[in-house]
Image 1 (tube, rainbow, N blue to C red):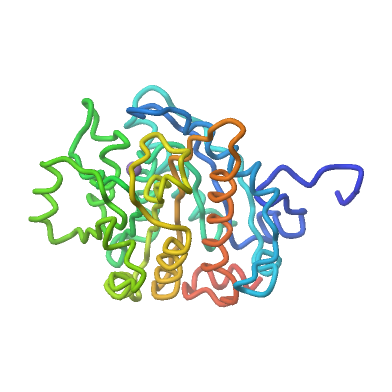
Image 2 (cartoon, rainbow, N blue to C red):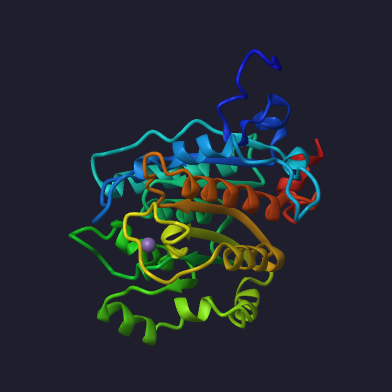
Length: 317
Ligand SMILES: [Mn+2]
């Protein structure tokens, strides 16, 4: 309904039906406000709602595109996922089923964005993707302060501290911004050819030499892009459970995103996790909302033809 008496719709970016209905949107956004295994600061269950609230203030015009890119591709905000609290494993299974269902439904997105919640959900997200599209050409790009390569943590292999290890069960991982890990993880990484780790100081290098390696890593691959917001510098992203000094600036984050979307064969799914909003402090929520909009635009703006034939047919209708 377009009526100036009422507020804009309570969806991502506050979009009218014409560019947010499922059949008119090439991007879909799923909220998973799950929090169970957080080990330090809590609050990630509030993350998705805070990102959506902040997004309604984000300007649709993007100077980088010199357009309102979302008008071209549309973003549908789905209903949030029901949470399962019986066990972390049951929750991850539920995420896997939901992601697989969304990606293989009669109406489906070209790009699915997922909002966490804690990082443990990513294991379910990547499995759901692999279930639908297979894992032969699948790789993951992982932005984080933490390596998250523990086999288990506090008794669970599905803890947020094991997120990347569970992704590695499915596909190779390129991780960026890492600055906190255990001695066991450090030794594991030295011996593991399936993980490339770009530590925080290297990722801060303005010449961005690691971006060439990243471009090669994702070249023509299917990419799952997972962003733990604590990978960013806590001076711009303090609203996380475990803020670590150092980290990635806004500009470097966008360089990483452009490299991923510009070189990958396809990025069917990304997630942005671990926002734990600080009441009354809006800048971090706004950053997260703007980042999600940027990711959709890099994925979908100016790319009318999906490289995937199956999905291409859907959009041709
Ligand atoms: Mn982290």
